[in-house]
Image (cartoon, rainbow, N blue to C red; front, side, top):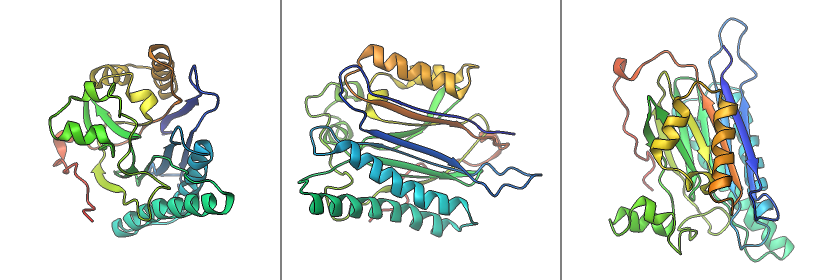
Length: 271
């Protein structure tokens, strides 16, 4: 059975160029008799106000695509998967720092969120405030944590998630690709369940919605393409001041949540 999937990026109403970059690739080694559902995806949002934000996101996603393609070409242990994800972020970071140094760009920054699935589990890595969500049965079961100033305020109970979306310092990152020597990603290992919808998106999309509206949209009978297009176009109507991009995948999974113990949704890297 083919995995329902879609990806889309638009410039928005006011931006002169699209500074987001996305990729979604599937395993080419699936046998004719069994499709395991492996896939890899990445999304980057070049940081506005910095030199060459659009190039920063493209270079980072190119690094992710290169390593992701290799990951899909062989069987990997959990440790190998985690190390490959770490390498994506380190290579992307080194590439941006080197490019900026050689070309006179003082700063090149981007967010980056990546995901690799072996069919039954998903491994997620992120730096910045682009997000990966998992929705199931009309509710959110997982979301990556942002590396931003307003996330720190939210964690301390100073502001709410809705207040964070309109805070004057909402675009201030505490961790980003290209701006430090070692931008350690948060890495998560999660079990997949029947009915999961996996959404990667930039802040241009998630700032326009609350979880309930997202969940209701993804509960519909629309295809991934129609669901994602609906959310992106609606986000553009609501605001449109930023680029808007997303990747949506509905994996084919037999296991239900009731039939398996839930895995903790916390970072498995602490250093």
